[in-house]
Image (cartoon, rainbow, N blue to C red; front, side, top):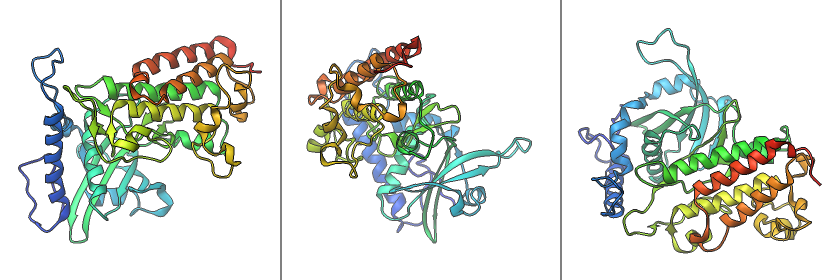
Length: 379
């Protein structure tokens, strides 16, 4: 049977006490409130009241999300047909689907969507599903993927947790930068994509009542719509940042190898500057067309960040790192500016890294430089 969203609707209680998911929901809610109250100690923010936590903000906006039945989503995906599968990861599978409009809007056309179906094993998937609904139910920015609704069912066959997103026609940045079977992404498009991603991240860091640490920035999580507008996706690992006199959030390190900041991996201390490090890695992927780790390359070139150190931005050899698929069609000045920005994002001391707002401004300058007619001649 369909359950209410236990994490957010206190009035609804599960009648199946042996089920693990509702139990985890209560624990998650307590942890969120705990974390929120610990983090939101009395530091003045220019307003009378303390900033609200993400769960508190969500409760005001949960009505904006559509609650789907499992049968609706089965129909939308032809019973989760393998031919409609468009992605797969540790969380489960993603399907392309077509959903009918809500009751009363029968004249409207069906909507093409992406439906994420979480694996039913373990509690970690459910916890990340809850986090994704909370965060995406609150945030609102053109460079963040839009969550349309969810499905939460506890039945005889176990728990079912699904998420329904807007459909992104051009897959991910990863698919276009590293896949040699697709057309090369032009220089100016790369800049517009990474600028949009930076603006989405700046909104998370600086544009809400609470600071949000994305915690999983990588090229595969930058999705592209039909116009190549970038949108950050997959908020299952997102966390509220520290407030008051706290300097960090302590948590077990998670994320993707090669993108996680070294201080976070070593200590579990998480700040927005951890996101800045990850952003620096992707900046170098944009420049080079190489993954952070390429096992099929010679030993000295396998680790991207170690390899690029041999070609500093101010050196004559810098052009050696540029993606050969660009065929020298880029602005050398803008490329050097971006390499220097990446280096500043990747400094060892997190406090010395730029803010996301500063990153956005530098990327705007690089984009303007490239649009000024300098993008067609590179040495």
